[in-house]
Amino acid sequence: AQSVTQLGSHVSVSEGALVLLRCNYSSSVPPYLFWYVQYPNQGLQLLLKYTSAATLVKGINGFEAEFKKSETSFHLTKPSAHMSDAAEYFCAVQNFNKFYFGSGTKLNVKP
Amino acid sequence: DVKVTQSSRYLVKRTGEKVFLECVQDMDHENMFWYRQDPGLGLRLIYFSYDVKMKEKGDIPEGYSVSREKKERFSLILESASTNQTSMYLCASRGAKGYEQYFGPGTRLTVT
Image (cartoon, rainbow over all chains, first blue to last red; front, top):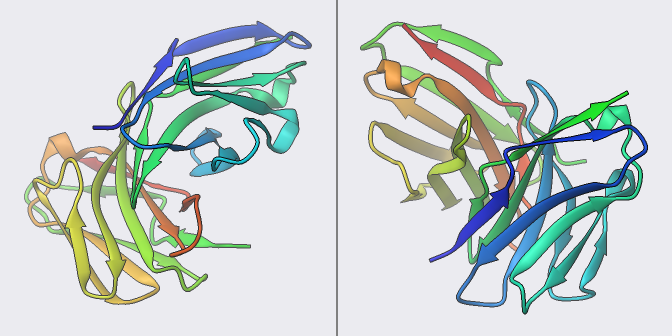
């Protein structure tokens, strides 16, 4: 069975600080992994995806994530947080035609 | 750009009513999905469809049904709405050869 664990339902950083959102997954097959972002009262927007090519994946808005098979992790990072990054972030793993989402991490950015 | 639209952004219904949530995508995607989103629980899959008239149950299908008569349209039906179905409902689509899902803006349903 697939599952996704996001550590920390709320993360707060200061503007300009490093953003680190954690995601660990369990998968019985090599996974496809995704990070999505959701702004208030909107749907989910793809930030980046890992599809078994390069282990360091760059996405939109300066975000990137590194696939670490030995740690079954796919943590999301951004070197310098911006106020506009405040949103909820979801990690997801794909198995065949189904996606499994984590419970989400709300990122708060303090001025 | 892929566009997924949902018929309503906000909906208020009474207990026992039959509720239809509509989703339309414009990218000729084979796969369409319905999720509900609740705080602290992330997204949970209700049903998905991989072709016209084809459907499969997701993780929480109880109390819901779906219909896909045309490739671009996927409907979620609450046969008899209950208060525990108050939630945000998200529709998504994905091409047969694509990886990611594309999401609609969501419908916030309140059942009173």
